[in-house]
Amino acid sequence: MNQLINIFKMLSDENRLRIIMLLYKEELCVCQLEGILKISQPRISQNLSKLRDLNLVEDERREKFVFYSLKKEHKLLLNLLENIEEKITSYPVLVDDLARLQGKDSYLSVCRGQPK
Image 1 (cartoon, rainbow, N blue to C red):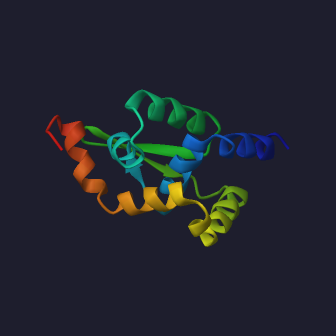
Image 2: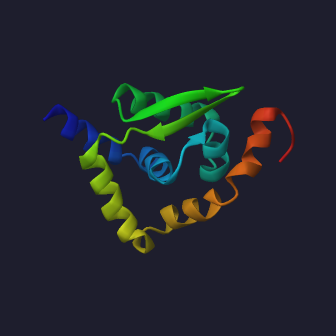
């Protein structure tokens, strides 16, 4: 029961929902999330930490980047996200996020210390 409650608490925060929806589509690093969501790096890191504490995301270091992805064993969460995705046009903020996801590689320059 606690896992169910934790999932709904996590989804009740707009920034965490936006992060989770992006990670539902593909793995991303903090710099990419920062660029796509237009949210500060500390806030993204704080939210990712909460998601990791809830065992909903995992991370993998590659060179100087840490990429985050959803853990696929959480079927309830994946079903909820699938339902949200089916009605995505009802959520303009999520539509905008997914549109900016297409340019995700351009945000890696922030991590490299290069201008965008």
